[in-house]
Length: 332
Image 1 (spheres, rainbow, N blue to C red):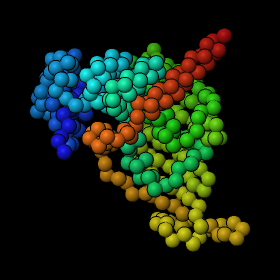
Image 2: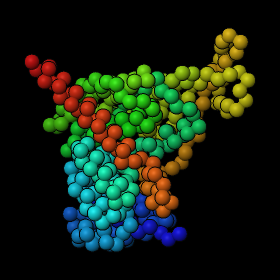
Image 3: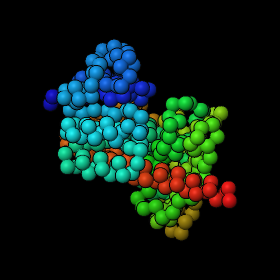
Image 4: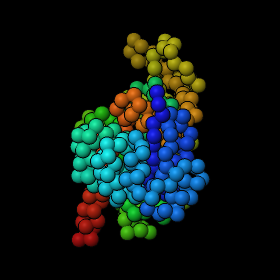
């Protein structure tokens, strides 16, 4: 099968990483890069031995697919031009600035038979990937995503910048509609929201408590999941997970690191086990780009669809709206 011709649009921090990853994927021909900052585009093109294009149309005429890593406010306009050329799209999160824009992209992508994958890279974090064999049915989820201040990304609220990672993961794990949202947040060093907390209640009874901050002293990217017969802890920074489970005493299919105890429950005895699932040695960004390429080459549904991106964006917007109302109420 022939290699896929791809290009990168926007070569800032993330776009440069995309460019690097594409040079490492065997099924790809990296045709070139485009950025409105011509000097930066030339620098990245030189670094990765590819071509700098001075116009978006020129790049699109030579590729099968592109990665869009431009600022969020430009996602819709850039993606529209790509869809008009009937090229496939990998687009960084959040998918667009507004939900209406995302819906229009979804509509036009279906009309033009264009695949869209959204860059929710934490879906492919080794910590989460290590749990593929675990049956996930959360009743309560708690996540903390804290970062030191970095001017990059402050054009959007921390909900869109950081929290949306956990929103997307939670929506992928909880197979139920959201029933209600409570949220609080505040801007500390920017004009947007820098610290936020949201409580998501799902119709199946699951509750998720989500916290994000971009002005913390120490970094943290952790999630805890509570479900019937299991407690799961994930550290996205380390790419590791821990599982505490209750299983039948005679279950021989469990490879546990430690037996913590036994419980008598009626006619069946249970044992409490501790597992540390094997960490998958993968580069999350490279892996998600490989899956995007495979979705095109083998005509598969992308792993993180535009609909997934829209759902995460809708929840993020709802959280920001709740915070806005809370701030208005507190000033009355």
